[in-house]
Amino acid sequence: MQYVDTSVIGGVFDEQFSASSRRFFEEVKQGRYAVLISAVTYGEMVTAPDRVRQIFESLPADAVEEISIDSEVRELATAYVAANILGPKMENDALHVAAATAARADMILSWNFRHMVNFDRILKFNGVNMLNGYSQISIHSPLELANDDENQNI
Image 1: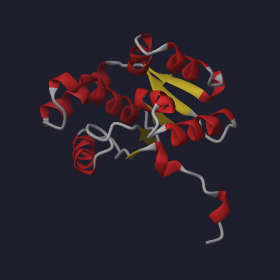
Image 2: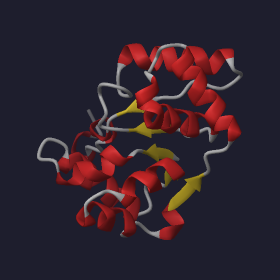
Image 3: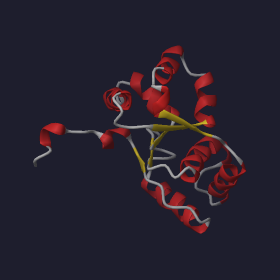
Image 4: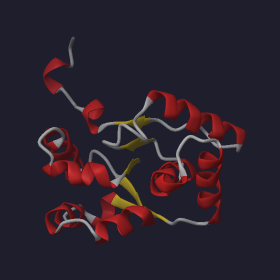
């Protein structure tokens, strides 16, 4: 399952990210992918524009699983901040990564290149994960999931 942060949902309406975000959500609707969403994502959706919430609400219920933010997730997010991977003001980003890690997501999808889809930070997140007994987590943009059926035989 892919953990999806709010930027992927909002990316549907961003000129730079629209094609890949739309393709991903179409594939979710077709049953190719299932998504994990945390309570953080739900909280961020409350203040999102209506059209962004409508994308989220259009996903099939059986394709979406919610992850709660419990003490385990909070402790891991705090460890990321303590390791200076993210600052205290980036708590939601730390919670996204911690929730996906604790839930053993296959990967995190995000358009947040500054705080999440960032090679140095991914190494550091995974260092903290390993020190705390968790597996490594992959963090990618939806662009990296592009399914190019036309070139399957290359």
